[in-house]
Length: 77
Image (cartoon, rainbow, N blue to C red; front, side, top):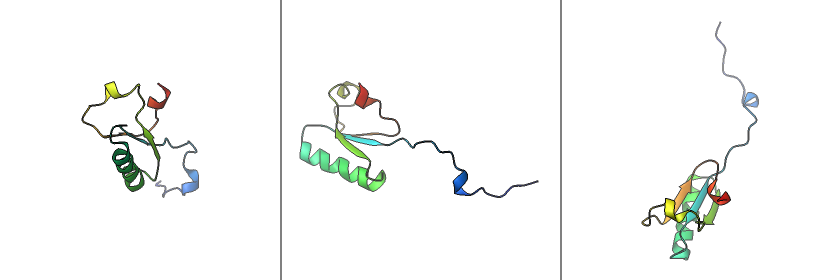
């Protein structure tokens, strides 16, 4: 016996993790603008924030913007 597709009302009722787009504080206006554009274009206007001081060592010094997809543990460091 085959079953057809179930209606969307049967989807799991779990919260969807948000994406955070971080920007480096140097060249703040340009990096913030770039991060905002990324968030708006690709991530449904999710959160844009300055890169926390605890995270830069884990990110290349060449990166201007950092996208964390899913649960944002960096903001809790």
